[in-house]
Image (tube, rainbow, N blue to C red; front, side, top):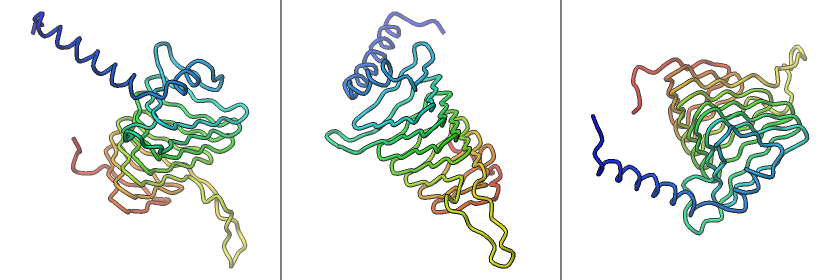
Amino acid sequence: MKQTLKDKIYWLLQKLKSGWNIFTKLNIWFFIKYNYFCRHIKRAKGVYIFPRGRAILEFGKGSQLLIEESLYLGHNLLKGSRAETLIRLRKNARLHVKHTTYIYYNVTIDVFDNGQLEIGSAEINCGSSIMCKEHVHIGEDVLIARGVFIFDSDFHQTYWEETGSLIPLSNEVWIGDHSWICIKASLLKGARIENYGIVAAHKKIQDATVAAAPIRRR
């Protein structure tokens, strides 16, 4: 259907309003620092990080944050709040964001030495924590609710008392496309969520697979 002049003007005004809202909510200092003066961040052409509030990024030697579409940090922050968004990439760690992703305030992401965290596109809500020892994969169009924990490692070595054999310390966490991880769920080492999977609130998944749900979220 052909757009009228009125439709075109309305669309332009909406784009300008959206752009103005983003600009006025930015932490300008962090915007300049992360987009233009941080050698650990690699951006596709025309792609930016949009930090709100206290969005703190810390980089170890050889680490890299690669973004192919916009990344919003401290998203949905309340006016006047000093809540932090914390991302730490340790030695040779890598965080790869493929499509537009929103990381809300009070989220903590920690990628350990040589670890790899991949995000297709996601909304990671307030109070969630991701700790990546080796490999965590988050697919496309993934919703992660408040207070979710995603850990791919025990971080402390354990062993079987009878045999003395060591229990594997880490195992990748895989979250498929269009998944929904509900409030205060825990995805621990070896958790695998298939495409369209739904993890119930307060559920703990470890060394197990969650199949696609028979229902779909909007």
